Image 1 (cartoon, rainbow, N blue to C red):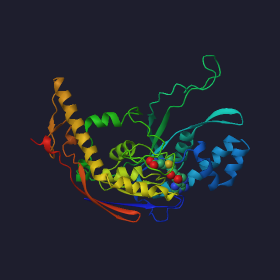
Image 2 (cartoon, protein in one colour):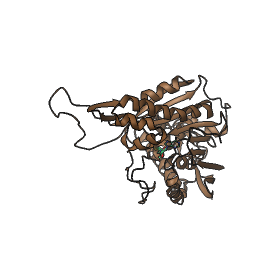
Image 3 (cartoon, rainbow, N blue to C red):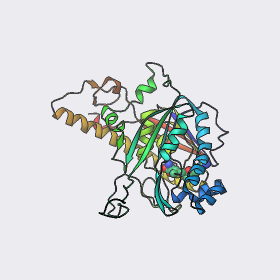
Image 4 (spheres, rainbow, N blue to C red):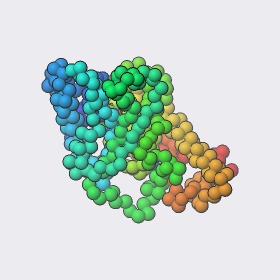
Amino acid sequence: METTHKIFFKNSSRMDEMESNSIDLVVTSPPYPMIEMWDSLYSRLNKRIQVALQEGVGFRAFNLMHAELEKVWREVVRVVKPGGIVCINIGDATRKISNSFQLFPNHVRTTTFFQSNGFVVLPSILWRKPTNSPNKFLGSGMLPTNAYVSLEHEYILIFRKGDEKRKLPPAFEDRYHSAYFWEERNKWFSDIWIDLKGISQKMNNRIGKKGNIRERSAAFPLKLPYRLINMFSIYEDTILDPFWGTGTTTFAAMVTGRNSIGFEINSEFLDNFKLDLTDIKSTTQAINTKRVKDHIEFIKNYEKKGKYPNYKSNNYAFSVITKQEIEILLYSIKNFKENGNEFTILYDKFELEPFRS
Ligand SMILES: C[S@@+](CC[C@H](N)C(=O)[O-])C[C@H]1O[C@@H](n2cnc3c(N)ncnc32)[C@H](O)[C@@H]1O
């Protein structure tokens, strides 16, 4: 198998390079409106945003920021295939503006946009980020009535283009090879994710080496696009991230054997992405190994409870709970080629030797 990955360093409000109805899945996280770190970006896109912020008219600034985002969402509406899925990681913003502390509900605005533009709203995931901060409670301490609830979650909004589900041939091989484990289904399709830590906002690359570029990366953890891609696409599909950032979605698409396209206004992350790529083979091997070891552990515990899995995998020496998991096939990365902003990844079947005996 071979996949290709392209990054366009330009504003995604015009994705002219892309054909309509060509994308299977979007996994992205935009700059959240009314979060201070993005004020300057939004003000560059529209000077009236800067004026609204200076005048302290929060609701106007919020609306204008969403109007900028909607230029990109309109393009997303165009390029996604009928039945294709859009996953948007977005948080609401809390902010004191004109001396009034308030919440700006970004997830509501974004949902309303997609619902008004031919998309079906599916149940979303609440991503609850673990926090230990003792100062998380805002307001007046122990005295009613004016304290504020602390905001410790973000959303993963999920939309489908049109009423009809994607049509795949009934026994389509790629679909069966792309299946996930039963116990993964039970965890991934829960509407609250509590096991995914936000990553440090200090710019590190994905494998933990210190990078030296943007102080605050706003990246999501690799597990987030990794899961969503496994949940909502199959091998060799094409994944789009119109707010590419440090390229986490592309990296996850490479690891999961999907093609990808990214758009990013700011090209300063490309070198760091290329640095990450030098370890993609070992990262992919480690992810697959952990996934299979976790599965084997799960099956052991299942058997300890006196229950027995019904099926044997056709590709690996382990049992699975359901018939749909029999054909699960994982891929290792054999090699990759780089050509400027384009990458080709070559794969081999993933083998886990010690468990073959
Ligand atoms: C929240 S970050 C995305 C982080 C990414 N998910 C990651 O893991 O690194 C949003 C990114 O969108 C970019 N951006 C904002 N507006 C854009 C636009 N109109 N076109 C392309 N990129 C844009 C910003 O430069 C920023 O890197």
